[in-house]
Length: 89
Image 1 (cartoon, rainbow, N blue to C red):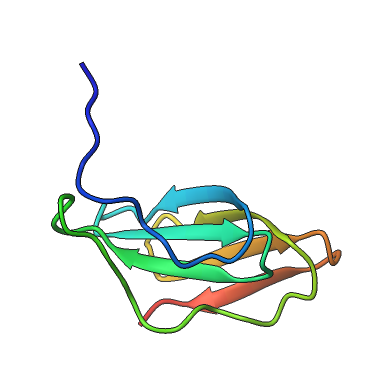
Image 2: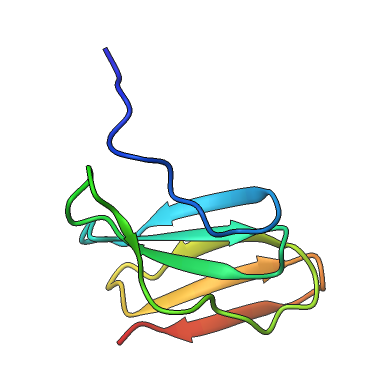
């Protein structure tokens, strides 16, 4: 049976619309109605934590996030009619 792993990840100030795991499973990206993308370190699934500040630049809700297969680029899509690419370290 499924069970919760640790506490909920909080920080978005609007609805969370989409999430995506990086290919290595160590980072989670979340897209929000607050016009931001947040990154989370989920190495320890019972004590996940935010990574840095939210990614900003969209002027509308972020509707989707997806990692490139190599995990080095994150794409975000927004209802501001744009796609943004983010370099991952």
